[in-house]
Length: 473
Image (cartoon, rainbow, N blue to C red; front, side, top):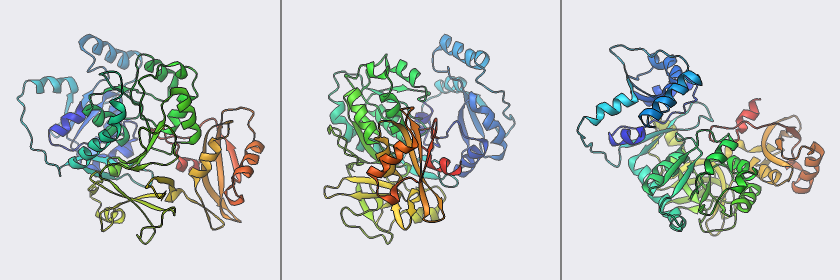
């Protein structure tokens, strides 16, 4: 509701992760120049810590139950505040410089006003979509209205042929991704709204049992997710009993989809995972596999409509088919640049209009692209390039492995060595079992030198396994 209102008012949206620390929130508010914020009261205490050091002048406070109707909404808000104690005490400063307004009060006041249309142009800023902050301070990808509209139309054209086959007038998309993330923002919210979909919001996708209970009441049409969620659900016995008769699109993104996960998901649901690829800087979708394909290709597919992909070397020259290089993207969905960072923008944009993704990929003769890895995640063992994604893909095929991650660690002899982290599916799985498996599947320099078993792996709020967190632990 707030996003639609902000866009219609001709303002720019700055999506914020509600779980930000005060330091992270302060940086994003100041870097973007935000003057107003809509915040759930559950997280107002974080805002309280930083607001006086920011340019925020208007605060709109919302409660979880605000849009659930008069009686139900009041009950939910009372329960959240006083029974479940989910709203920490806060005191936002009230003075001439700042206003604090309740969300429902703002809605009531606005309903008495007449609509004044704002002339929003294609080149106006729609979103400052901040990167996840995986390297240094987060920076805002400047997405114009034309960038976002282009990607909505592009993704609609790609997915509609399968969605038109749903034997129901009501399409339902599962939104088990945080709405502040570009994946959910474009696919679930914006494209979903254009297609008249019902968005099934999942507040906590880590609660697999709760997620399955929610899905029992619906026959979903589209299920966007990351590999870790597909994997967790496909391994859940209760999930396998659901009705998947209307599920026609399962689109994977955010991280590499693993073959073992794709095979099990297809077996359980009858709907293949369609892997795609994109970034905040590309609004986000740049490539996707065909939605009518029944087999998992292990690639990120083809460029979507009006999009060009080039694979280039360090000198900016196109490499030969089948050779690895940096994935570069040109299309109407590519951002205008990084907000107030001309030097960083120049570093990622080429003279001929391509965005340099920082991902290493290979393109085959038919134009399909396979992700090799992030340039910064590559492991250098005795001068040989080792790509963590390849290690993880192969290890995940072992029947005793639930999840895994590979990183590089310092080694006195080889410079770096591969370290493997594993969450067991089979409790009897041993280090020797995996070492033997690796000897059968990897040449010597690719084999993990260290293997560590974990109960769980660190993940982002989207569910992506965080290699950087493993490096610092």
